[in-house]
Image: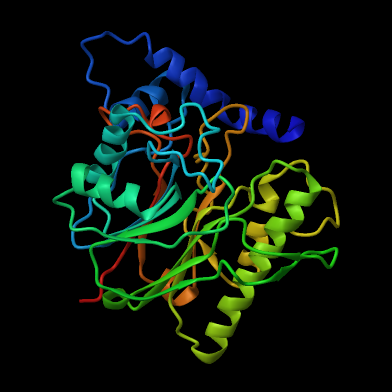
Amino acid sequence: MGLLYFSTMLKLLPLVLAALLISFAPQSAELTPQTKSVLAEELLGTALPDASIPEKGDALRFVAWNIENFFDVYDDPYRNDQITKPSFPSDQRKQRVADVLKLLDADVVALEEVENRGVLEQFVKEYLPKMGYEVVLIEGNDRRGIDNALLSRLPIGAVTSYRHLKLTRDNGSQYQFGRDLLRVHIADWETDVFVVHFKSQHGGRKSDSKRQAEAAKVAEILNAERAGRPGYRAIVAGDFNEVRDEDNPERKPNQEHGAVTMLLNTGLIDACAGQPQFSYNKEPYLTRIDFALLTPSLAKEMVVAKVIPLIDGVDMQCTSDHFPVLVDFKHRR
């Protein structure tokens, strides 16, 4: 934790100071995200990252978001789904999640940490009835029952789960995706969406090897597709539970590549590359571990990409421990 934590805090220090100064602004001031950025620049000579939601226009909008322990109220006797506190989201938190999704207005949404299809379908029915979303969720391998999912208002084609696929770790042992690799073909977009939630950081080197095995298998699948189809369009998105190698000050020379960099080395493009905004919002791990990685053919159609940390009227840190990642594309109609 040490070096990564202090490196992150040094990068964020101007933003923290700006936030503290902004807190003393007159109560009557209307502090929209744009206003905050301007005020920070005037106070400290540095601007906050642009937190505004881009104008959508006729773009096709994609969002990836870990919505943190989105469980139902029922105890599943086959899963450890009651160990989190609280063990399911309150109605207030569900409303905040819904408010964010309404304001982002994405056409395709990749979600992580959803317990089951039923809780997501009920959520969409009660809180997002006018969004036109179809739910995709296949039960994965996680012991707590958290799964990858997708919402789409575009027609859905083939759906593939890789939960039974055998992976090989660096010590030769067999492993499976800790949750799943969910693959959904969006027909009108002519794009495959791969929703990932790699192994967490808990467990040290053992967990690192599992994430690397997961990333290696994703890379293998993508390389096979791209070998047969040079113009193959895909996006790999979700919670990677890891930063890029260059953003990890604890990485040693000649150390094997982490999961994110392994995938980038296959030619995938990080949609939010170069942006300072973190996506995991709980201290001390204020880091960008949520990504949208694009094949070159799809990246050519990207308009804008950003992590969204602020939305007017919504306490984002009380909504989830991750911020959503947004990517807009030119939509071929």
